[in-house]
Amino acid sequence: MAPHLPLREGALDIVAHRFAVLAEPMRLRLLQALFAGEKNVGELVAATGGTQANVSRHLQTMIRAHFLSRRKEGAQVFYAIADPSIFKLCQLVCGSLEKQLTKQAAAFGN
Amino acid sequence: MAPHLPLREGALDIVAHRFAVLAEPMRLRLLQALFAGEKNVGELVAATGGTQANVSRHLQTMIRAHFLSRRKEGAQVFYAIADPSIFKLCQLVCGSLEKQLTKQAAAFGN
DNA sequence: CAAGCACATACGCATATGCTCATGCAATCA
DNA sequence: TGATTGCATGAGCATATGCGTATGTGCTTG
Image 1 (cartoon, rainbow over the protein chains, first blue to last red):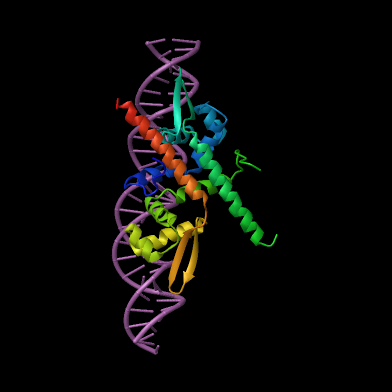
Image 2 (image 1 turned 180 degrees about the vertical axis):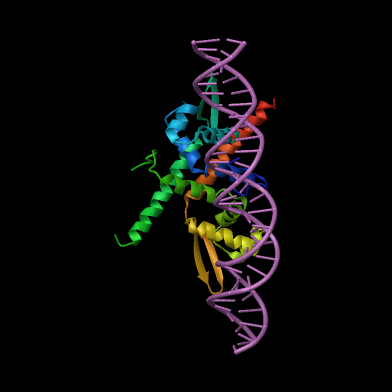
């Protein structure tokens, strides 16, 4: 039941793909914008500074990965974070990154 | 101190890169093999079924990302997991993946 | 010193992925 | 109904990345 860490064959590819979805700065920007709550595409375009086409594509990518949810309201489409584990994932990476950078800084004598 | 989630510019690229390192099946296989403890390159080649050159390349990638540590002993080189957050990262992804697949299975009527 | 083992790395190819531009499609409004 | 707004998507290009093959480098051993 728990994390059978010797993962079955094929599972690794799925896990890798989930990490890959998080491996694009623009998608992380979108997630960051969505941490504050549901937003429509126009708001996300404004928040990230990307083009409408590009933002839309990245949103589809995260929808397919089941990281986001979609809600149509008239002509607009609202996106929201659907997988709460994303919070912890980002926190973990940021945390260990901070630790590493601090250590590197200390190595310079400081 | 804690997760300043509105990350400073540039930090996102670094975070994205860290996720990217975890976004390759072969690297995940190597990490899985290393979960049991330190191993040298030959053992990792055997454990993953990859070629020596490819395994070596991926190990360098994870070293540069500070995910692994390196220890030379004579002609051999031993690698080990240097960043404990990798455990939790994999557990989180596997956990939410399991949840999602279970839900999808249930949607088929079961 | 020569030979062999363990590991790293340069090169070339194939594929994947992000980006822009242009267009399609649906809903709203005049 | 025609025009406009909001979002999605196809085409094409540029780049990045993984892989295999071949070769380089350091250590060990005879």
